[in-house]
Image 1 (tube, rainbow, N blue to C red):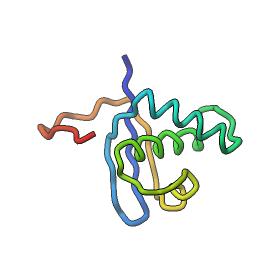
Image 2 (image 1 turned 90 degrees about the vertical axis):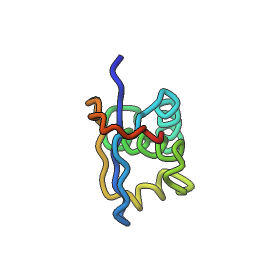
Image 3 (image 1 turned 90 degrees about the horizontal axis):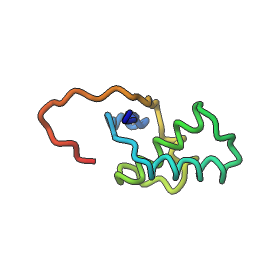
Image 4 (image 1 turned 60 degrees about the horizontal axis):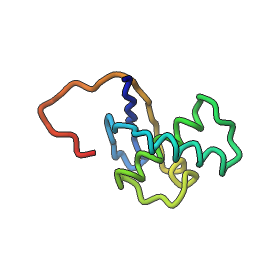
Length: 92
């Protein structure tokens, strides 16, 4: 199975690295896209929706919606690369 991870930085400098994207995040992102009238295709909007869904699930954002999240988002990256184990347990 190929696992997906998202890393994102907020404009206040807060960074969240290698947050595991779960199936529930992908389903929520699909709903976010449909609710906002966005096409459900790979691209920046779907990626931001996935990042927002993962951030809400892990309670690392208090943004009420994806538009607020985008206003505070500095950058993001999705990856299928398994992060190196640094010996620290993953809090997510």
